[in-house]
Length: 289
Ligand code: PXG
Image (cartoon, rainbow, N blue to C red; front, side, top):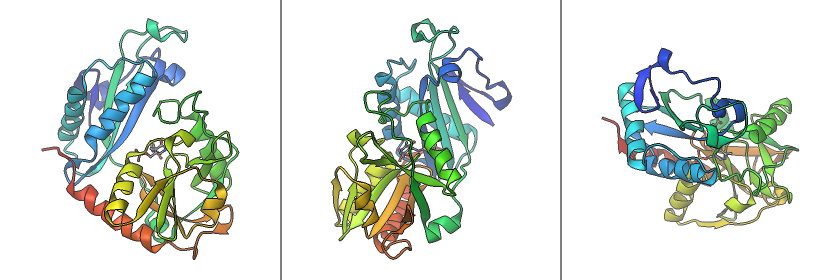
């Protein structure tokens, strides 16, 4: 495998970073998870834009411009003959000292890995996910704003641990006000009487690109889509609930805290949107070859 490191492609065995890299020492950096479908990179410019916004928010200077970054992603896919896969784009603060001061780091480190993806088992797409609300609240917006896709994922990992311990693969995270934020690695939607609702990003959600695409697709298909403050109640009494994410795409939630959602099976609108999303993902994007 070829990995993009710094400013060029290197062999996987040479793709190593310093133990003094602040990405490792402090989780100081930002990242993106991107999908390639059918020889195209899906939502490439949107991912690059979000990466630079995340970097700006943590005062991290990426040593290349957006066009160069997008090209580096495509080049990495090409070097690995990627047709369908998952791309991990990481920018760390770089090598520094054993102290927090990011201004003492040399230069941000850019890493691009083009690989395969571990998906949820097909059975979960067919039958839906069971999730639980966890005690770990989503980061306060004035701590690490959840809109920043930072390398510090402990908030989400703590939530994921609670989910797994409760026998679930995903969970529902609330914000510090007890409002619905998102799942540990996916956004959440409810459908009630044909209207889709998802929490606004200020409630503690990452502004997911899958979320945005699903909102666009749903509106085009004639559904009303709202961004609004949500309580767990809104999910419990919904006709359908689903999660969205680059890795998961669209996955139905059929049980939350032991309340079956709707009929307790994946809903009709969720299945319709899922099919439309698949069609879109397989036909749009930046060509690799
Ligand atoms: N919320 C959070 C906290 C995320 O990390 C999403 C929502 C969905 O956003 P996109 O733009 O992908 O639609 C994410 C992104 C994993 C994993 O292994 C998941 C994400 C990122 C990295 C790893 O489950 N999801």
